Length: 129
Image (tube, rainbow, N blue to C red; front, side, top):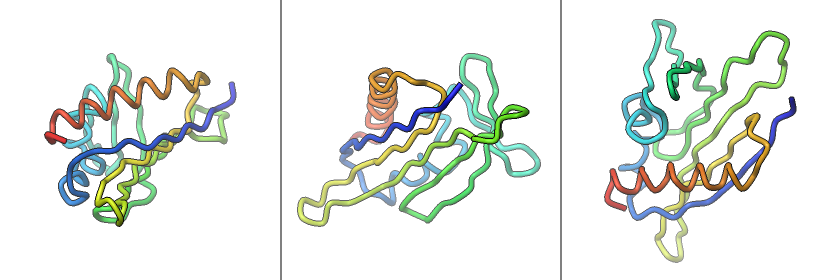
């Protein structure tokens, strides 16, 4: 099954410094992104949704700017799924946006948009933004 690339921008009323722990740390991600997120002994992130665990590695990050996670692919799959969360500030309006890039097996872009809208709304409730 092929993968689909989704990108979306979501405005959030919080500083990049305040938001960064929520897109980088296991405890921050567990509050809004997954049912639970933990680190294993090798520094891999274990994301849990509805009892299913998915192992990912942090492949890139820049403090207060972005983080990118790549999931370990199933055997025989040489095209790993990943997601990137990037914090961007509009210098003119001083608005902060979360730019989402999601490369996954979900092939319905409308479903992905609804999913990410819901996730970011949860994050906004947590940070008051």
